Length: 470
Image (tube, rainbow, N blue to C red; front, top):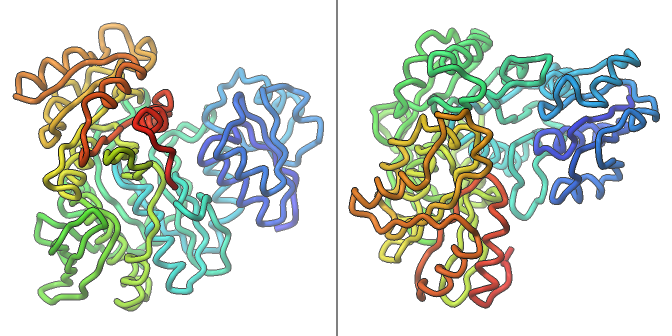
């Protein structure tokens, strides 16, 4: 493909920033704009010489790009989106551009599912990388130590996180419908993104449409532990391979030992032991992710020892059970969990990893789904393995429809009714004060939010007398 001049509207989004980096690596001239230009995406792009413009203005297009990629943050009335139409500049959604520039001549390995997409896609890319396959990849998180969420490799495989969220104001279908899956990993199917999907049936329909894209000679790796993933897989015409830690499956994992450094586990294929591996990841939800990658790696031609090397050396993804620091003997962990299933799984993983230590769970309801009352009851059952729970105020509650808003105060009362030590503390400074005063040597503080949460991690570490680690 000849070199092009590409402008990205909303360039500092995780996916858009990664696409910008890939385009620059491929030799295209890239610029972009965003309402707020901020790290880590801004610094990552600036290192590649990509010009960033703050604010959306028609003049940002005066450099005469050949193509504009419109992020889903932009509405039809965005000043640059309107100018693109006025000037008749060709435009694409983010997933349309990924397909056009990078997927048509490669073997797309698409990781889809309500939970675990980022960790699983990053691990899949890492295992292929360590095996010398030099894959391309684009995932929704930054790999620790690499400080990149993308790579343009010379190998045939392109590993991509398959998001079910809508593509753009003019492209309302799910992003993963553009990704031409040849190998697909399906981790789970649950209701999420309440602002986009009317109900669970709508979620199931978009996943069914995605699975129908797999060719007959493709491969679907799906989680047998997840009822809807198992059910939806049955209509897929591709080869179907299942994995699990609970249900009977072709690929089964069993943890032998869990420590703060990770897990030692056995993998069985059929009725025979396939291998014993180690991983820095912990928890049954991550063991499921590991099994998905192991099964996919095997079907992509990797040897057991190649898979094991990648599993053991995986650096992890920022904001996924990431230890941000240890101060005064207190371990502060950052995690992206926000859906009740993810909250439950993350707490269970930390309870196993740090068995015998007191576990604080600090939760900020921040997503469009968690602002709504739809999971009010489910959240009450998600914190059972925590020793202390602090629930912060709902971030921008007005963004949820009136009469359908999540109540943090009600959640705390329900947790107390279940016998948990829980409290509602709306403000970050007060949460930090409580944790700094009441935490003790050996405690683990798990902070769960899909946003910055007022910089609570560093503020807590500072209050405890330490600087950020890593």
